[in-house]
Length: 299
Image 1 (tube, rainbow, N blue to C red):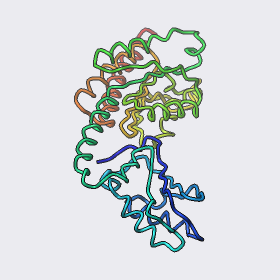
Image 2 (image 1 turned 135 degrees about the horizontal axis):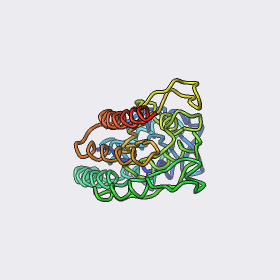
Image 3 (image 1 turned 135 degrees about the vertical axis):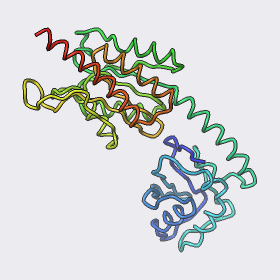
Image 4 (image 1 turned 180 degrees about the horizontal axis):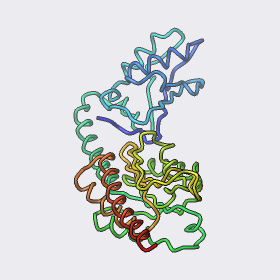
């Protein structure tokens, strides 16, 4: 049963006294009892009658924490200079607070937690946010026809959709906004624009910055260095970070319409990010081939 700590990662051990105690040994014991990687557990504060541990991991298995208070205190009391009393206890304002619950309720807690986690996951899966990108959109030089269309199509498919702000063509800014959205519980993030071959196009690179395993196939290739082409072509991007799927689509509205159609079909079939990227790639390549072939014939 994997539980998300939701940024509440502090564990207070109260009513204890330290006398020349080794803080590393305290962290060693805590990580061992709670079955956490040692590098993710730190003593971050020491006061007259309590100490604070910080757990750096994002999730923890409920089996490893529920009802572990007595075991943890007993093991800590074996450390030289770590002095407990009958009032020593452990407190946390978040999921880590399960450490102090009675073990007899463990099975009931696990069952209820599994149900709650599944409900939360299902809700997250249906929460979407759309980020248009680009100087021309942000400064109202062109109308954003993509976001209203994407919103309408997603809502028809049962998504709860939020319109995100228009993001400038800035690598770190885009990466930061996307990372923040993944932490805010969106199951689907869609960006439009910024996937081209010009230097100003940063969207796919921003996704790759927060997920090195992003699938980013080219949908059209150019000769780098010709004209304004500073990259080898136009790419889309599909990433999966935790429960969040990030999809970077081109800016032209006809390509967005096709991309959304393929995306929704792929989601309905339960495809993974590699399959989703491949399906969108094939559809857009075929469309762009016809578009550029038609232009070539006219010239």
